[in-house]
Structures are given as C-alpha cells and as structure tokens.
Length: 243
Ligand code: 6PG
Image (cartoon, rainbow, N blue to C red; front, top):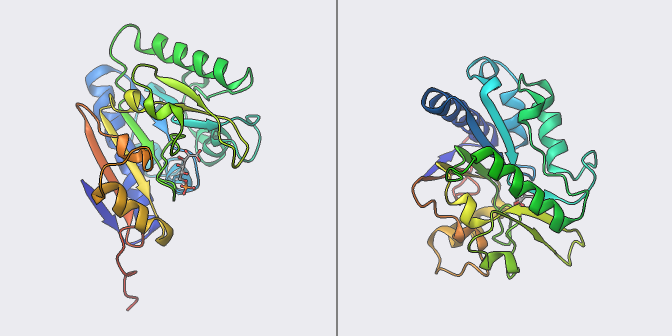
C-alpha cells in the first residue's frame, strides 16, 4: 500500500505516528517492541519528531528495542554512521534503556560484525521466529534498500539474517540485515522523498521483477504488511499548489 504525503514534513509526521502506533500495539500484545531503523537522510526528520511532544509522550519507550537495518563500516561517531545520526536526532533524547539500543558496530571487521549482530538478534528472539515489529527502510536512487545493493552476493542470501557487503564505489564496507530476515517482520515501511526517487520508486513497485538490479523488490513480507510512505515528488506528482 502506498500513501502519498504533501511533503517530507507530513511524511515524517506519519512515520513517527506509525512508530508510536506499532509500539503501543506490540507492547500491548507482547510486552516489548522491536524496531529496525533506516539509515540515510530521509528518516532524520522522523527521528527528530519522535524526540518531541506529542510523540515522545505517546509510547512506552522503556519497552522498545532498537536495531539498525544497516550500517556503514565507519567508527560509531563518524558523521556517516547511521547509528550516530539516529542517536543525535532521537535516541540520545529518548527514555530508552541503553541496553535496549543495539547499534551495528562494524569495528571487529565486517564479516565478524555481521556474525555478532546475528548472534545478538538470535539472543533477542530466543528461538522464536525473528519477527521484528517494524522495519523502516529507505530507497536509494539505484534501487538499493538497507545495504542490499544491486548485483551484490547478499541478494542471493536465503538463510542468514545479517551479512557484510562490499562496495567498490564508495569504497566502504557495510553490514546489513538480509531480505529473508526483513521479510519476516510484522510491518515494513519504506520512507521515500524527493523528485530524484520518482523513477526508481515507480520501477520498484510497477516495473518488471529484477531484484539483482532493483534489490528493494526483494522486500515482500511473508506474513506482514508492506507500507510505502512517499511524498508527492517521489510519487511523481506535482508539488501541492501554494494558495
Ligand atoms: C544507508 C541506508 C540506505 C538508505 C538509502 C536512502 O545506510 O545508506 O540505510 O539504504 O536508506 O540510500 O537514503 P536517503 O534517505 O539518504 O535517500
């Protein structure tokens, strides 16, 4: 399902409201809420809103467990770090116990980091199916999502939950949740904004299936909801008229 918002601000408000709603539902049903965060720039405003009223007061944040969908292998305080962005925009101000925030730390080496993160997730799910309550994702201009990049071996992964990814350009290893793990989530929500995404958004949703070229097409929750939150520009619509 796609919902189109006038601009990034209203998209971000809807995304923040989605996080709050899913948190309340999950905590009521299971006593905890697990969320995987998207990196990139689009979700920054959503995270900032979650750190403010009214959202800040609307969910049981002490029951929340935060994971990351992917991470660039840079130090956790590097400006390119997805963990740093989410901390600065939201998590440093949020009443979430620190031991429930699980940044993806690449420090040992990407392959070891992937193994460690998978072990952490296995511990969290304790033998139950790895059903994250909500996964937020972005969409790259080349059709990637999380760090599932076109023509990379991780796209063939069928069993593993977390994997390392090497990209030549930019020369930066990454670690990512795999499509099989993401597809077990209860809700997966893509946040897509800006004119530059219009072509790829249309292709991912309506073009021929070609996940080696458009990895976001791999995201098809098996027993969950797939939501697309787009602004008018990304949806290929004219910007709203200013009265
Ligand atoms: C990352 C990502 C990546 C991102 C898209 C969209 O670490 O780069 O998680 O998948 O979500 O590239 O990024 P923007 O929101 O900046 O366009």
